[in-house]
Image (cartoon, rainbow, N blue to C red; front, top):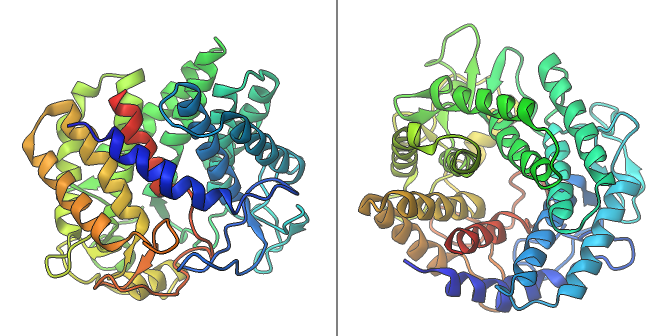
Length: 408
């Protein structure tokens, strides 16, 4: 199976021309507070979450262009990367190397009204790390490695002390979450690759990643499904928060783990477990009536159920569970492409083709490019905020990039 040509064309003729229009050549970074249709900037605020992600995308496109795989102007990409990095370094980092969550276009910091803080998302810390990592993997600058490690060490200290924020959806007290573990696996993978490139020691970060992988595969997994939230005092089958499953997150997590294990551990020890989780997560999330992956389902299938304390995340589950949004679909492309490459098992190819057929029939915006990323269960477009009020430049292009890279 060779898919490089298809995804190369998607990037060169569709996604890159679309996103290049929204690069902020004045202040650096990207303007992505865009309506769902994709033709109108709603406001010019910048989430550091998106700025770190976009730096990763720019740097990955640059790498593929340098190798001659993509036909995108390398000099323009380098200028955009430099501007994006400069915006992050000048504006997004606090003195302790936490990251500012939200900024004005020019980098003026915006304090969160609810918490009174600037640093309200540990996920933003991680996205800033992976963006800078990908930059220095391609542009020689050893001085930035110290910055990466300062941000990372601050982040891991916050996780260890359990003193961190995940706005706009805080983790309820008493819960461990899959999301923190999975994003740290991906973050540590990028850090380890960076340290490896600069011939620096990374043993302790390998140990951290191994521990988080074991937590995901063997502590947070039950009956072949990843539990997004685990309450430390039991009652796992009563509450909505405990019962719900997020198929897209599970699939994304599985390819994070594969990518890491292929390079730094033994993939053979875990491939059957990863495959089983991927199949079950996909199948329980698949909408038999309309096709595509649902956003949230109950662990027994169907509409999420259970007692709710109406936390912001529980409200999100019930408000958006049957929607079809962009990122679960794109993550499914990556994991089943990877699993088929590794094993040659037709069950993975079958699901890859199933999601690919659905995705490219439903999501592309034929008029202006990119995807209409937020849709109702039946696939019709919906103008609605489902996490942050942004159009995401990351998940879809990253999926295409990962598939291209895996075939080179």
